[in-house]
Image (cartoon, rainbow, N blue to C red):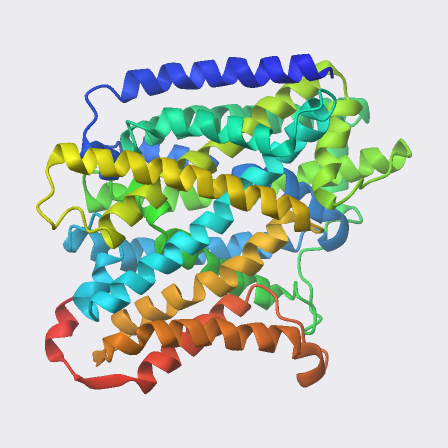
Length: 489
């Protein structure tokens, strides 16, 4: 596929996206930016969250992982189901009862202002790094297959991409993103299905052949029983459960879409529906990975160029013809935009509300909007910087790095909310940042030396659980007298 055609696909898709933005962002105000005026239809939010949850990381990394971990990732997905059930049953009722705009303001009510700021800081850190990882994988493909040939530097490619996202999230915020996510999810799923169809035809596979190869072939192993392995089935299941709780239920980006639904029941219905559909979509991505590796083996194509993330683009753009390449590019940018636009909006909202406290300082609507614009642009520059740095150091599948970072940065949030919900203790608020720093540091050393210290044991996604437990224990160590009034929060 020629670089010109790839770029044409990107521009055409972006033009359609901006048209949707224009329709949805008219007469937008700060309330529509932060929480969509609490008027989003639950089914639109549920459908759009598919694209926001999967992102470009899932689009490329999950199929690539099949070569080394087979279908063991499916245990993580089953864990997601359990985690989303906890969100629907425990966290969403809390957020609606307190009528939160920022979910981290719960920590102020429960523990105090320092805990509140600490929770918001860890979200901002987590989302900045996570969004950068997700954007990197997409921009890197465009750089490799388009802009390198034209001599365009990587940083400029990133800057143009972020500028597009900045422009279409600048005004409408959550109200716009709910609808653009819907458009992007549609294109991403269409691309996934069509790629499976096209590669099956190249392999001359019938539906029965695909079923046999996916579920009874060499890549179909789901349950790993070696307790020292990172992808042991129980580690994956529990890790997936707590990843869902932390990266969705304790994440301002994901929750601001859910609490934009008018009623709690509608938001809960959205969460349950979304979680069930997500299982089947991840299964399709894993099936695609099987077909990609089967194709690369049969055609004597090197399965990986640099990392396993390269498998899908190398085959889709260079081996399956123009139609496959077009579907791949559209699917990729459809998967990338939802994770980037939501992150930029959520980072802006959290910094304005949680750090700058613009809602409680008597700042006028006009001044709030001016500050919001400045913060929005500031985070766009920050994402640009982190993406450029990440390209210099990346040497592994992005999804692996994403979950590793999440284990360190979301762990303190998991511990804070768990202690707040399942104990009646207050804490010494000023010491909370220290606890939330020591717990990830301890996890880092345990992870680094686990093979030596624990007889060959390797931490996987359960590192997030350990981080949360250490934070919980640390908070218990700085507890204060029981406060019976807190049982009502």
